[in-house]
Length: 502
Image (cartoon, rainbow, N blue to C red):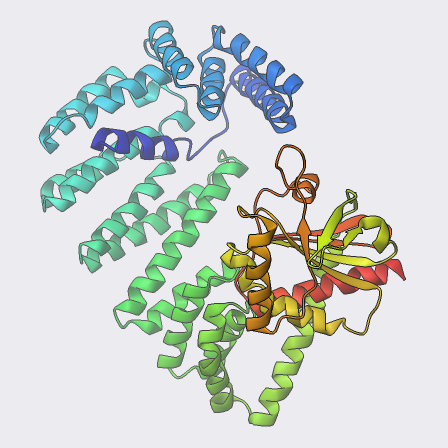
C-alpha cells in the first residue's frame, strides 16, 4: 500500500465523524430522503436473492443518473461494497465533472496533498486546497476532513521535531467535534515518542473539547454517541499513561471515570486498575476488579485466579469463606447461562438424515424419533473439532443415565475414503479413551456429503441440539477454546430443551 493510498483509506474511515442538525428545513428534508433511500437499499441487500439483487442494481443505476451529488454518492458507496471498481471509477469521474465544487471533487483534490514528498510541499498544497474549497462553503458535518488533513501534517511535524510548526498547525484546527479525534491521535503520537507531558496536555484539551461539544444543543444523538466513545478512549489512555508512569493515585480517578461509563468488562483495564489499587493499599477494591475478570472464565481469568484468591484471603476472608464464594459464583454463572440459553433457543425443522455407523450399520433420523439429539459435525483434520472433544466427553458422561438423549458424532468433509478415515477415527478414540459413537456422513451422486449439505454446514466444528419433535433448538458454530465453558453451555442448552419437552 502506498503512502497516498494509506492516507485515502484512513481518511475514508474517519470522514463522517459528526453530523449536526441543519438550519434549513429543505436541507433536512433532503437528508431524510437520502436516509429513506438508504434504508430501502439496505433492506434489498439483506434479502440476498435474485429478485432483490436485480431490483437493487436497478435502483443503483437510477441513483447514479441523479442530478444530486448525495444520491450519486450513495450509489457509489453501494457499488464499492459490491466490488464494482469500474463503476466506482466512472461515478467518481462523473461527480467531479458534474460538481466541480462538490464533495467528490474536494476529496480528489485532497488526495494531492499527500502525493507531495516534503512537509512544506504538503502544507502549501493544503493551503491551496483550502483556498479552492473553503470549509464554510460546506455543511457543518462535511468539515471534518479539514481536521483530518491537519492531523496528517501534525504527525509529520511532530516526528520531525518541528515544535514551532506543530504549534502553528494546531492553531489551524477547525472548531469542530472532529478536533477531539485529532487531539486523541496527537496524545497517542506524543506517547509513542516518549513525550509524556505533551501527551497529557493533548488529553486534557481533548476532554475539554468533549465537555464543550456535549453541551451543544445542535449536536445530534449519533454525534453524541461518537463523542461518548471517544471520551472513553481519552479516559482509558490517560489512566494507562498515568499508571505506567507510577502515578497510580491519579490513574485511579481516570480508571473509575472510565469504568463508570462502560457497560462491558475491559480485561486489560481491569487488571491495570487492580494493579494501581493494590499498589495504593486498596486490596478489597483490587479484588473486585479481578472478580470481574475471573467471571469471564477465559484464559486470562485462569491466569489471574491465584492472584484473585490471594487478594481475597489477604483482604476479607479465609479458605472456608473463599470456598463459599466460589460456590456462589458458580451458582451465579449457572443461572446466567440458563437465562442466556433460554433466550437464544430457536425452532427450525431439522432435515431428515441417514448415517452409517463404524460397523457399517445404517441409521436414520426416523430411528431416533422422540430423542433429544446432540449432533457434532467434525473431521479428523479439524484441530478445533478435536480440541472440543474433552468437553464433549464430559457432557456425554453427564447424561449417560438418560436414555432419551443421543449423541451423534458425525464425521464429514473428509478428503479420504471411509476405509482410510476409519483407522484414524479408531486411533483417536482409543488414544484418548473417548466413549463416542461415531457415524459417517455419506456422499450423494455429486460427491457431496449429504447430511452436511442438508444442514448447510460450511465450516466445522458445528453442533446442533434437536428436540424430540425434530426441531433444531440450538446451533453452535466453532469452538471458543474454553473446555469448562463449552461443557456448561452445552449442558445448559440440553437441560433447556429437556425442560421445554417435559
